[in-house]
Length: 553
Ligand SMILES: [Zn+2]
Ligand SMILES: [Zn+2]
Image 1 (cartoon, rainbow, N blue to C red):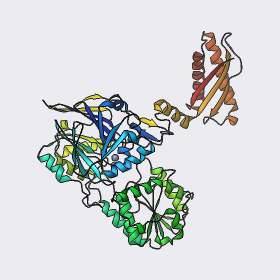
Image 2: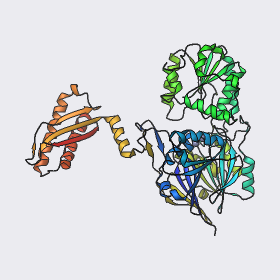
Image 3: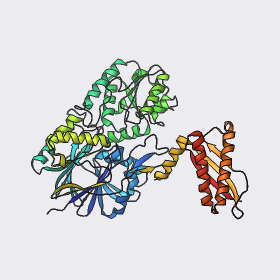
Image 4: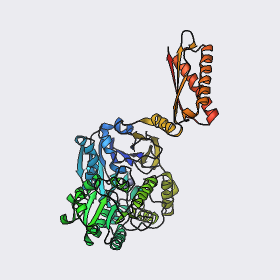
């Protein structure tokens, strides 16, 4: 009997983001990705969301390393937090490690991580794990799928991938290797990216965007061009730069992460922009508009980003006019539409012409669509399948595709965050749960917890009512009339009668509580909260946060 393998899913199964899983073999643990997620609009004041690290902390001494499939924040952005308490090596392509290092350095925890670069197709041991790094195409260069050669057979983790047959760097998803694994060892378990499982057909090639960009640049000859894209989308940046240089323009970067990533990718030889074609953003004002192309961050409408400041007319470096064309070479991630639309409105108000993915094919997804996912199934022919990376509906859509491709229904496991899967001689099954809730990060405070978030939600939606009463506990008397302070519930000056009435109710409740023998502050505060809450709800149909303050005089 071969030793069983266990996989704990810590994030990314049931949401887009914070991808993280933990594979166990011979008592050792290998992490695959450790990402973050950006908060929803109703997560007030939250900067980002992480996987729950409880299980990893409890087993810190058994962790032998982390495999980073690629450099997106939802795959490596959690490492800088995990490395505050833990120490382990990280394996990935040089670009992936360079992108991850940005945040790890910022957090000052580089001392806890050894960054180990791996080559395309490399196979190496990490503790007891036999790990193979298989090239895949995605919206950041040098992404990997990962094949784990285990006593239970090959486990193939697709990473984020698409099957781009004409990628900008000619580095294609290595389907031949996946096919070879399938026909020799066989693929025991496939874990597959589900992000675009609901989208039919085949994702367009990144190269297609290059053609669209070139014609846009030709169309807008004579105008200054400002583009925005993800700072990690090096292939997009390459195609923008190519279109610019071909049209006799100089390229300047705008935004810190864009500047950093362009430098990193040029140093690694992944991005090719001639020195002579690059200018500093401080110098673009001296150039005629038709010779300028600016590549900016902020394509998701992030409020403090370079593009957002530009749209508000608050950029330190340039002012937009009717002689500018702005190309948003991106697609709003669900949840960001509002911010993106606000930026587009701002740009238009300043007179600029705006081209976005709703008007032209200036973006191509980095995730495989239905036909590509079916193609992977056909080539990998997995014995067991678990859809990963996606909301529940994406996971389910991916499961449907696998079924259509012949994976038997009972060999497809729809897992969610926190599930622990075991692969043994009898097959794959769910054998337990580990903590996998959201870890909310708020500035430097760290985890703020569900309670705080619930309070913020109540405050944001309903406001707060503070009720102050002074009492003499010994004699059981109310000393001063209750006082009510409110924010966000009613406009106090216009609601004097209502507030007076509320005070009266509260006083009655305190008197009644004394009458029934309650003498402790906590008990009195409970009575105040109940009375005030009931009154507020009865009269205004609202449920603001009620904060009772009972003082002993
Ligand atoms: Zn990705
Ligand atoms: Zn991802």
